[in-house]
Amino acid sequence: MTSLSLTGKWQFRQAGTDEWLPAWVPGSVHTDLLALGRIPDPFVADNELRVQWVAERDWEYRLAFPVSPDRSAERPWRRLLAEERVFLVCDGLDTLADVTFNGQPVGHAEN
Image (cartoon, rainbow, N blue to C red; front, side, top):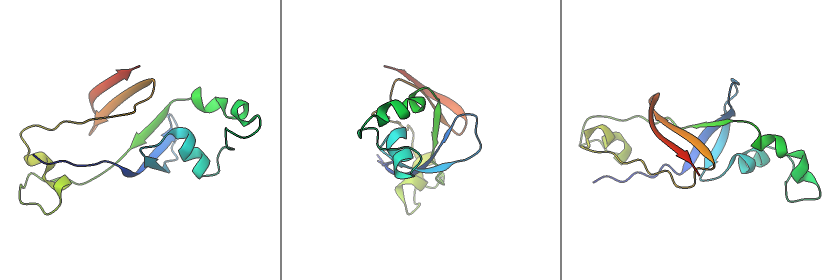
């Protein structure tokens, strides 16, 4: 069995916009926007009120990585297509989330 961590650099954007921004997973849209200087620290003064708009929007995250059907591929993520089964574990999805892989729906969360 091959194990692959998807922790690291991702991209995110507000749904319906064209601008993809750098993100870090695990994390949150608030921490990503804060790191980019797009919002003030929500834990300072009354900033929580100033960043409420973030929770009222939909956000999309994406990660691209090359895979190969070749079991002998050097890196684990390249061997993904050679596996009989692939399990995608998404810990920490918040509220509502749709998960797609190559544009195909593979999961939905409501918590």
